[in-house]
Length: 521
Image 1 (spheres, helix red, strand yellow):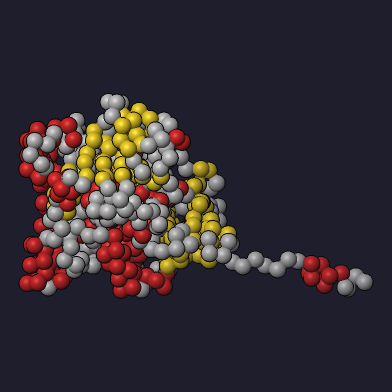
Image 2: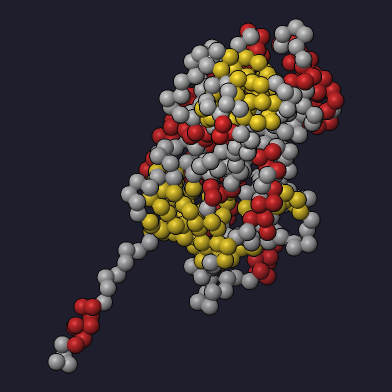
């Protein structure tokens, strides 16, 4: 009997669980930022294993999510497009369908599809100091499974707003309204607005897009704004870019047009910052010329803040102004007192009748796609961390994030981050480092990371990471400064702490040896 017992015990041992897949890099989010990151890993670090995870059923992020009429870029595609892939369409201010086609081509050309995993939602990430790895908790929405993936590096390309729910403020009496209320982030495919009265609440990029896109089919459409926004016309087709591409070819023509537009954007921004009064006058004059004679420009198109204190809105070929001139659309500047059965009662006493109210009232900001971050099981509280070079968090190892510009094309910053990130990984590989984390002076003065006047930023200021007053802790919004800063030596031993593989005791290489190596290497 004693001879049998060992066999019986062995038979009772559970089957070994399937090992967790371990990768070099995990990219979360398959929008513009994630696709850009995947390109740089593919081209610059081909030896790296990686996966690109996307919670939704399609790539594209913003450009696939939003389906409201007329959705388009508010930046020219020669700067919003990737540096590595020419924008060859004649439209410079492009609609979502054209942008989606461009992104699909980028994915196909780099064979990113081989690494793409759709319907993989990441609710949590935990860093293990002993393993020097991130563990991603993943909900597979296609199968209902919960799985794990491990990776040495995580790049979060999920942007900075909540894809699940847009922002809608509380409106008194909304339940009394007998019409339909729609948020642009959740636009119904079957929404019928033909011959109906539509009120769009808001004055941002979405609102100024909806008016000309819907006006021809509605009985009338009104943009109801609490505060005006600076709005400037841009050509839908960039003649310079199209000529440059025809003469120089797609790649060289695109590069020339890109740099022309980068410079143009910077000049306009710097001029607005240095000469705000003059800039206001110029924008007002442009608006006045495009609007009907006698139009009350100072009420409806004269914001109380300076240009670029909040983002300007671009309208292709002045379509918003043309729609107003036609009489099919109007702008009302007032505050909502309450919804009524038939529409909106304003504080001025005016009642706007509506069959449909569109709440183009903005976004909810949410970094990291809502993922819960933790270090050895301890939650990462974002407001307690400072952003390094606009792409890493103090005290958090091997984690990159993508936050683009608020005063120019988002993608310009994303490209710089992708290149720097790959150089950082290459530097670490060459010297045997397994982890790196920014280290900040706890006495350094800080302020909100996104120092921007927009309401959607102000609502969550206290929930976001911080920035410092000086480089490399300052969140720059200048492509030229970032190009220099992110092109610098990655061996920043003053602000970065590198570690080699952990010893059995869990201790990495000493800070002293790291500083010596930087001095001789």
